[in-house]
Length: 173
Image 1 (tube, rainbow, N blue to C red):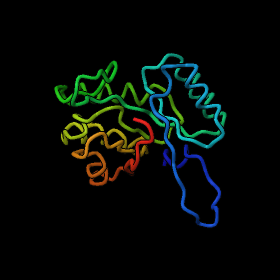
Image 2: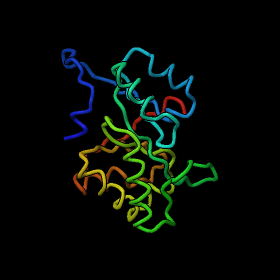
Image 3: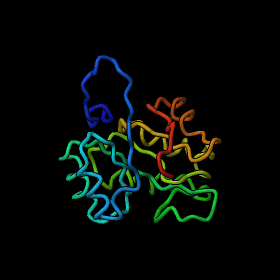
Image 4: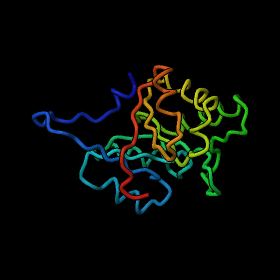
């Protein structure tokens, strides 16, 4: 399975509890992104698919021992701009598939996807089903960033057999 193959192994520290830290919105601000991937890790860095030099940046982060994710832009409830080719509730299934596939193909070596914004889109079950169905054959997992309590992302992923987890704490939103 892709997500397991691309994940960063950790040592069993006598079964002590572990904390997973995901830094997202990576890739647009090159100097800050570089500072993130130069941190001791492993950390999980989630890259936006429309960042410049994305393959170069993700290779550099992976070379430093970090785990990678795709930070997939999705429609928010408010007026914030999620970025180019965001998944919107107004798009057809075909458009959702095209935008999602383009994002999934933007780089490789990642374990899965988490939503960038998405407080509106992640409550839209038909769209989430369309998108999550594209993750399964690629062996990807889904991290529901839970930008809204009404998100159906994790539940829909589980129903479709896509490995998923849910964000518990936002350290800095």
